[in-house]
Length: 443
Image 1 (cartoon, rainbow, N blue to C red):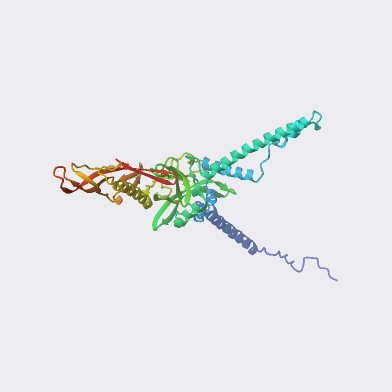
Image 2: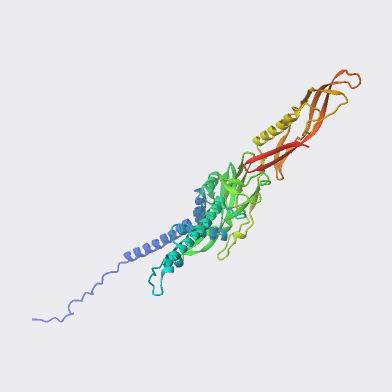
């Protein structure tokens, strides 16, 4: 039997290792690259649609289109002190009305209990304690009455509107802001690009095109990735309404977009968003007037960088609109009635020198009083106007005709005489509450 050593006679076959598969690794890498690209695109889209200046501008514009003032204020980087304090005051008032305020510990103690307690803390059952409690209760009632009067006075002041010289916020919310949004047609953001901090709003009012700068403020970043932007405080602006002669005409209020606004020394100051459209009017029985103000932010409003601020509370009104008042037809009709009544009273006196009247004539002949006839001018020749100095009357220089029969002073013959008499009347016009007072007298 032959023996064959291992490895001899046949060559040993080398062992085969399995080949590495590169396909799955390449696939995972490609998928990762695609995911990273997609994430980058997603971040870019989120940044453009949510966190860019254009996105913030569009949100602000949408709030104005919807007439949502409080929502629009939320897009400002900061608010003026007077606006912030007003908001804080409203919150405090709401908190008090809802009963959330904690009462003072001294108010919880009853005067009656305090007076009747002894040193040991037990109530002392004496008549004097009851009397003391009654007095304490009386003082508490008087105190409550005093507080109630102060509260009523404060509520009365609030109903009367803003304090004299304080800017009115009527255009920042409610129906007045809604009316403004209705007047601004095609309101839209018209910036160069969504990434540009210099945004702009465009809109039409009665077919006329307007543009308003929309500066944005960089306020930081979110998640360390996205820049955050808000509306610059310059867009909460002010404008003045001047009504020359309003006090003389008894006008204490104007209507702004249908809402009453008090005048102080013929002037009202209003806070307003940029842009805003304000229809201003006076429509009383005796005076009327109307004006329109389109509030926009100019191109000189620069973009505000991070960390800087503008104190809008110290800004002067951006513009002033002056509204002229005109005497109404009813006021002229009342003037004509008063003048006609005065002239008629003079004409009814069959004398050559009517008493209390500015016209008169004389003759050397003996006049038959029963034949004296006065023909007065038409009251329609007198007109009433209004300007910054108050009521003005024109046409006060008049003439009347007088005719009569007389006997000649020398021969007693009958003669018919007539003459034209020039005269002037004095008309005083003034307002007393809702009444127009007109006084006519001889000059």
